[in-house]
Image (tube, rainbow, N blue to C red; front, side, top):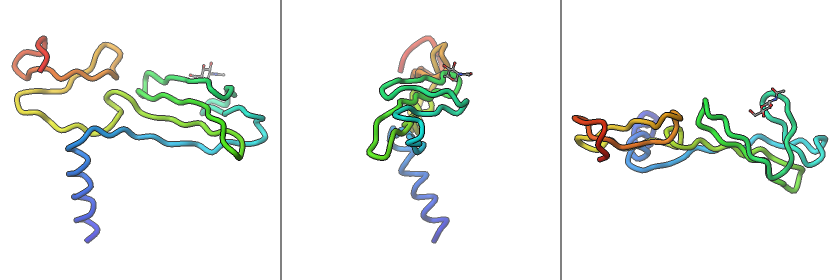
Length: 109
Ligand SMILES: *[C@@H]1O[C@H](CO)[C@@H](O)[C@H](O)[C@H]1NC(C)=O
């Protein structure tokens, strides 16, 4: 039963483009700021991009203080269904996705 659920989830997520997001709870002691993983405090409305992880975080105001909302983008933005004769590659930034022909990577699919 559990395995069936996991399989169903894996199959359905492969058929559509779906990003992942997560929020880290804010701390009211930060006074309207959000703490990054490295301890740096950023103001509400400030966006930080982690190009190495293809992840973008923004500090948003919440009723209990502020929360850091992070989302994957590009290649980290979700699961992608393979198209016959095509393959997925990335731009030089390693995040932006491109669908190219399997037999000729210089041509878009
Ligand atoms: C923490 O990370 C942010 C975003 O990458 C960066 O702008 C900031 O300089 C870093 N701070 C320290 C102390 O490394």
